[in-house]
Length: 147
Image 1 (cartoon, rainbow, N blue to C red):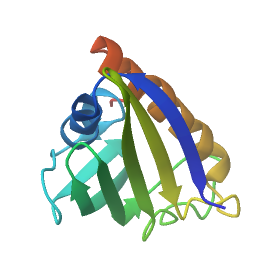
Image 2 (tube, one colour; image 1 turned 30 degrees about the vertical axis):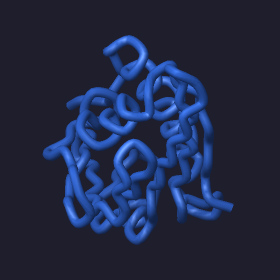
Image 3 (spheres, rainbow, N blue to C red; image 1 turned 180 degrees about the horizontal axis):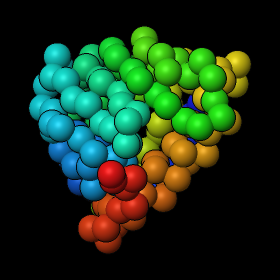
Image 4 (cartoon, helix red, strand yellow; image 1 turned 180 degrees about the vertical axis):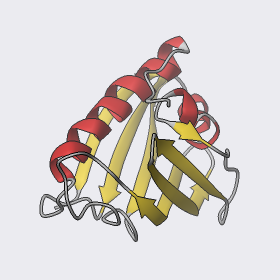
């Protein structure tokens, strides 16, 4: 089963969507581009590790899906993880819960326990989605991994 999580964020669906499409570097990692439509691409990197994504779905303030089209994942002590994300989909679905509350349903489709990187990617997504992204939307300050 692919990795999923859900988090309640004090903010509008527009604020959360903008954080995911326009400000990835503020809560995840070094990012070369913001996105605004299907087909747009961006790369996020940590030191010598990077992932390149292409937007496969883009529904403003509701849903965005990133397809990983290239990966070079390097982590000491983990063999065979370099290309594991290629072909996976990172899916963000937003639900307006209240006037200033958004439920974010997150799935990394293809990130499964059988992958060598799962034991480091699972807690990393937990940190970046449920803590850093949430903090960025709610306070303006995230906890990205910048290098």
